[in-house]
Length: 137
Image (cartoon, rainbow, N blue to C red; front, side, top):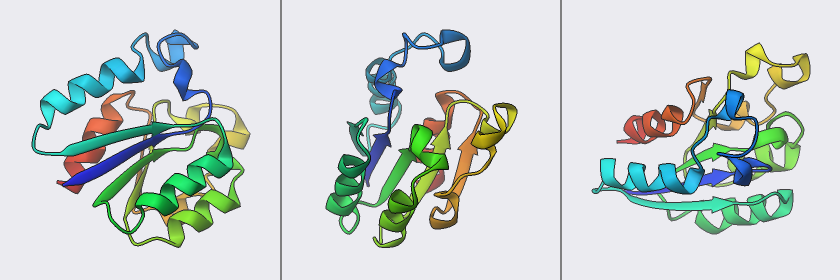
């Protein structure tokens, strides 16, 4: 099984940014743990702060990978284009959020990309990525 994890804007700062919300582990450190936990899965990782680059990556893998785990960050609430990209490919996408978007500011309660995803995991910290992989397995 081949799964791509895509993280959007500001998630390159995990481990440094607001540790009370996002924890103190970088995603690269966590990814190594995921690879050890799931040796049978070919895990790839991509992060960008640029909306168009995220869309290009979805298009690139969206017909060949078995699954995408997507944390679109702030684009979750604003990007019709990312939602359309997810809808336009055949690879199923699961929406993941480290924080509980429903316990945050009101504008974060609406996900534009959810309608194009198979489901959402929100508020379980980095553990949400592991649960997403287990879902696809």
